[in-house]
Image: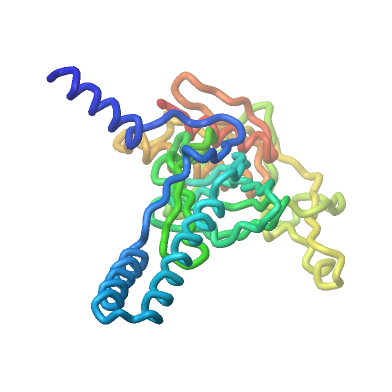
Length: 318
């Protein structure tokens, strides 16, 4: 008896239990694609049964013809629905970092190496579907949205591919679990909190007050640049977005220090506030460093430094 219960539990886990992420390209073999009738399909089968019984009772030749014609269409639909999903190749793509509370977009490259088109393929996750059509010998990139609820690494988990093409009478589906993940940064503070005052040191901080810096030229606009430094006149002339560069510097060094935060703040609240400070310092073009318990990042500036600080905040304590 114990062996029978164990075998049943193992069988259940084999079909419905959690699976390990699948590295590389995922190939939908025949034994990975399941097919069952939908509610309209069951109603269609019931209607065929009623038509067959009526044709037998009243000996209707045309009733036989119509019943078997519709039944043959249903049988052919089984083949087309199954063939529409089987032998697809799914390759994991990119997943850009996001902040907690946003949507993470996982890119999947769905490739059709057969000689016929695949229509109405749906990728389901969390009750939401992303539809795509794939031409023969072609592929398409599908972005699956997943809610990023907390900081750290986010894996997409199980994604369901299904189709009801061509008649909607049957549903073919398959499960995949691609080996990919997305980094989720802490959610920044909502309040307009000031940056901590820079402390004297060997670093340097841009002076934000007008008139104290010397104009040194223009450079290509970057997303982290402050709107106050954009050369709007050049943009109005159709020359694109350019940022003003100033040569004046003030001797100062900005440290975003964990120990300077209020003691009554919790772990996630402190990380959220430091995240907001990192973003604000990067937007203003400051040179800053980050101090966490057991972690210290030397002062620097630019996008790589900002991403390194955000990464440490996202993975701190995990």
